Image (cartoon, rainbow, N blue to C red; front, side, top):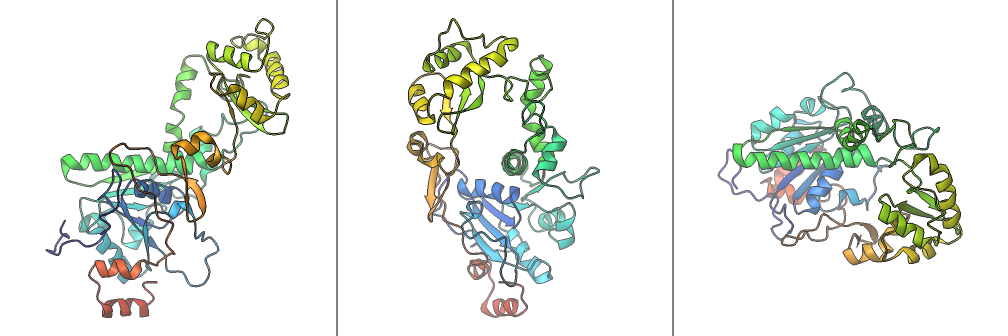
Length: 396
């Protein structure tokens, strides 16, 4: 590919050996927190060449995590984007890129000179991915917030928790990652597919409120069908049903039970060595309180691993509740390579799996800004220009 406005063959994004279904896709990432990095990790994991534009920061960065898996698999340059020279560096990157990703509040990149109009003036084929909490417009667009606020507004937080108790935040999985970074990555790939026809990029406005709302789609069907009361902790999938819940075992650990269908519930009864003639009907909500007592008593008599061993190979839908640190050691996860070790850090592997174009194992995060000179040389910057940028504090 040639740079726009130049007959120079692009040398940026030169790692031709990288594998995966997105091999050859070129991404510029403006450094941010949580959702934007996760979107770029997903793309990098699947073979995209990602260059992360980090800020030039003097002294120690207390938020830096040198082995953060969210920063794996890409190169990093340190650039002061508050200067015209720094902005120009980023726009030079954009000329050979397919995707640009940013996660700032609305209007920030426009003020930097890196908004959609600026990027598309250099390369109209770029898909410009933006991730925010509230979206690019609306009454709350310019206010601060975090995952808990976004899922509170989208309706995703309300159903999570026990009946009669307050909602429980599910870490920051729903807005930052599922309804944020993954939502943005999906939007970017959709825009890239459309570009095959139009030849043009476009702006992808991914809001974490919108994304986490999308994750609740199934609940609206249950509600419309009369299968969801609306009260927290009283429904089939929110812990209200005793056959879809967690239980403490004799050793103080937990198992997850998901025996919804009649045949699966029968298998659970068998695993727990209960008399099916005396077990309350799991289809009658009036009997759920008594059924919960029966299941809790039976499960509480054995350790977690004893129960898991008894359920193995059956359709009882009884599994261990593993901590994230235990999960990599489980035989099933080990067999599928669900987790990998990168630079001594256990972490989820790239996914999903592809039979013809499997991605390679990502390299560990590079120290921030450590690829600056290499990347800028690929962009055509000479030694004198690099010296001048260093002297001005524009690059790390």
